[in-house]
Image 1 (cartoon, protein in one colour):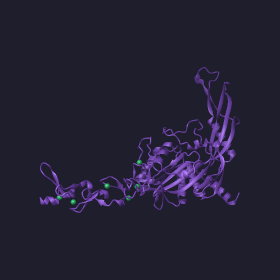
Image 2 (tube, protein in one colour):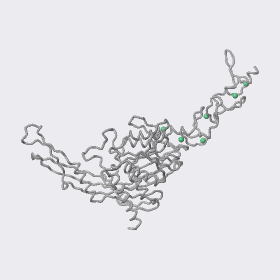
Image 3 (cartoon, rainbow, N blue to C red):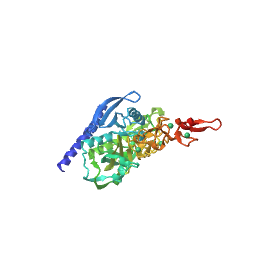
Image 4 (tube, rainbow, N blue to C red):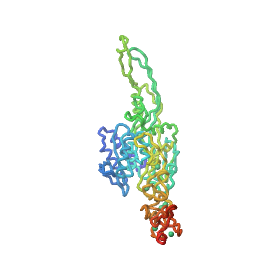
Amino acid sequence: MDLIFKIISQLHLKVILKLNKMFRSTSFNLEKMEEAIEQIFIAKGYKTKRRQRIKGKSGTINEIDVLAIKNRKKIAIECKNHSTPIGQNLIRDFYTKIKEIRIPNGFFASNSDFTSGAIKFAQQNNITLWSREEIIEEYWLVNVGRTNVGKEHNLKNALPLNIDYEKAIKLNLENYDKIKINSSNLFYKPYYVVEYVFKDKYHDPTREIHTFYDEGLVLIDGLDGRILNKTDTMGRLKQIISNSDEEVDTKVYDELLNYNKVENYRINSDFFNVNVMEPQVQNRFIKKLATDYITEKNTKEINYIPKSSETIFDGKSVTYKPKSKNIMLKKVNFLYVPKWKIEFQSIDNYYTREIYGHTGTKIEDTIEYCPYHFQLGGLRLVTKATHAVCEVCGQALCNEHITQCPLCGKWLCMECGVKCSNCNRIYCVEHINNLCSISQKEICDECTSICPICGNMYSNKFEVECSECGSIVCKNCSQSKGMIRRKQFCINCLSDL
Ligand SMILES: [Zn+2]
Ligand SMILES: [Zn+2]
Ligand SMILES: [Zn+2]
Ligand SMILES: [Zn+2]
Ligand SMILES: [Zn+2]
Ligand SMILES: [Zn+2]
């Protein structure tokens, strides 16, 4: 092993260990998490401030856990240390807060996972979610993952990469050329899939026989030994009690079910970083983790009625716990799962996209949907795909909320453009210079007339044709006259009459 590689790999190990220690420690607190988040942003060249109190549009004070600033770019980061998955309501509250203080980029970091509802909401409103997994990745990137563009990597036991770089960065936006790719990383993340069978017979104190059978897979994160199975050890689907409509997101789980498709291949990265994250949990430890999980999952209370008793109310119970000799680990499969992480920049707006490289399943894509289509209060979200980015503020919006300046073709959002009060088309601020002398509202060149009498510019909807001389004048320079059939006259003709 060459020395450099050895150093990097040791450093890698150290970083992961440090993080795992942080996440596992019973004294884990928000303070430590905020510290780690700050370190990530500082390493990326930001200046950070903690617990910032900022006055909002409506005058209320909003507290931001971590505020990261680089040049003009501002990011508000919310940090949560919850034992249960983060639901949509918390993301909504955060969204309302950052809108209130006009910070376009929000990050929500949490020690726990997010529900599918939370993910949908965040994606639509350009809030980047950082679960523990993303925090580890980011921490790894700034500490270990120095640029390795152009290097060739040999991968063993990796899911084939079906989504190439071109596909990963593809944007279906009219002016995608206005979008910069800030960073593109391809992660290869280590996982274990353990195949098992468990069989046992048990005699309760009344000599009755109970048979047990279980088979399946135990899915384990190779970085920290976390069990990823959808069901917990009691066999229940992982759901949050408080918000039963929202299920915990299980995209990694679905990805791992492809474990039998692994290949060995080479990958050359000309445009992106390849980050191969080596497993940090030893093989024998994986076996122990799997056995513990299966044991706990199959531990049951057995109720029986002692022979001597007369009624069922004399029933007793005994705890049955599987013995490890009855658990057969048929195979321990190791695999790398490819995952893309792309950061797009569109002026002051930053968007994150995460896609699994094998199946193409999107984990998050904050540029995909227009933020103006959600119903507050409802759990169901209406989505509308983005069409273009505003070339002034950078927001990605759908065709209802973005339009092209009729003069220069620039894409503009409703807030950045100026509407012609006559034709209602949206123009760039610099391409609409006229003010109607009658309505005092903006009008475009096409809708502007100049009055031959007063010389003022006015909207052509106020044009009046003089029935005497035929000249077109503004409303202010005309008058109607006549008893039965009222006719319009310009003020010049009127004085001659
Ligand atoms: Zn705009
Ligand atoms: Zn829209
Ligand atoms: Zn224009
Ligand atoms: Zn107009
Ligand atoms: Zn006039
Ligand atoms: Zn006239």
